[in-house]
Image (cartoon, rainbow, N blue to C red; front, side, top):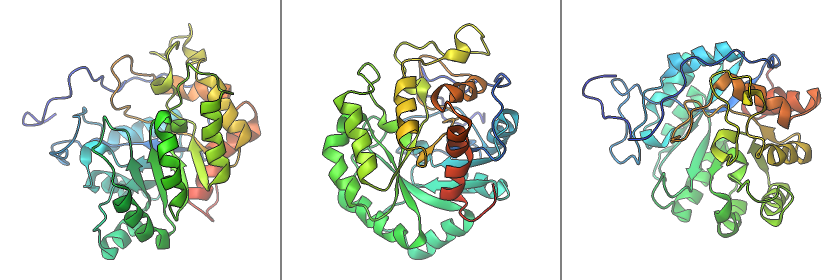
Length: 311
């Protein structure tokens, strides 16, 4: 890291540099639909107004992980540490040579010419973040303006929120004139039952609207673990058991509207940093049939991000 770069937020863990080789072989054409690039700061400085400072995690590192895991394509989601400057994300999408799409963060005053340039670069959506510890308040009027501007391009809106906030947000979400993609299953409280009223309400919201769900980030949702660490066979290949019932329910009820992603480089983790190879090995525990796995990993993301292209 450049000597003039800002230091990482205290307590945050760096991404794991030596992931194990997955025991589960991903099907050809697998898409990682949720990953990020951070900087590197020397080339793409972080936003002054950011809430956190991560370590560097640039496109070369992302592509190396892609190839190591056996992933075919990536969807690179704009990280909040870069604010509305999408330069690092767009640079990575372009460098992927057609093997990546992007999800941007834009302001309501963005010009049509800027949106068209992002579309030409491979961007296919915008992200709205409602997690208060990561962003300031998200004005509904501004976000609705953005959604109306991107709708003619066929883009979607990616939503990041906490499950406890869904009751006050779902009316606004339902009013958006674009498809919706929900990050990390809406961050359910996994200490509550997967068939309980809170998660059932989330699934009803999915059923009643044009919504896709990312079955991702068990390391972020888990309370009891065990964690997926350093290729460990003890527990590691059966990690995050408390999250599995939630993921299985989503996959079973919405097989044609689920997506998967690594969340690399795993921002804002302080307890443990997962082994990405073992995160791949988590997939068969939540998508239990070959048909479910092919939809989750290949058919669904290709239809959303590369419609009309062969798998």
